[in-house]
Length: 137
Image 1: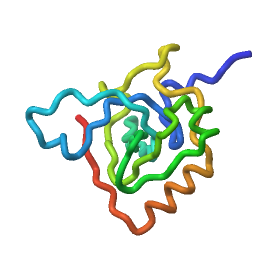
Image 2: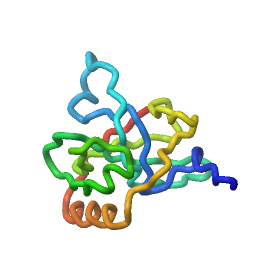
Image 3: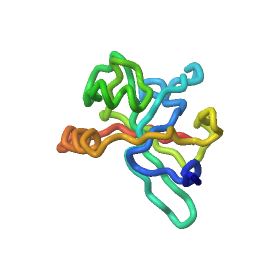
Image 4: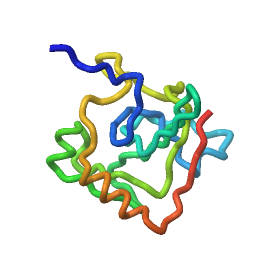
């Protein structure tokens, strides 16, 4: 059975491993290389042959605007037991970009995607809020 190769096609709701840069560190000239963390692709905008991707970090012990991920979905996505999706800040970059960490199979995207329910909860939480954007070169 042949699987579809999605490693080169970012889609909203998929999970990647990414060197997420927090806004407070973006302006610092002395900031260390950001650690690799799971991130949810929130939005993809095609501009001719380019894809502009916005990702939200998935963090344990997060504060601020966030949505909890159900225990069953955390397990299915291979996330830590206390991971939440934080949506008060996003990193935006051109796909694929140098900040992605390939998976064991060399693909760029984790095999499972977030549920429609989780995406709906994030969208509802974002309503009426501003999201800080960090542009990644």
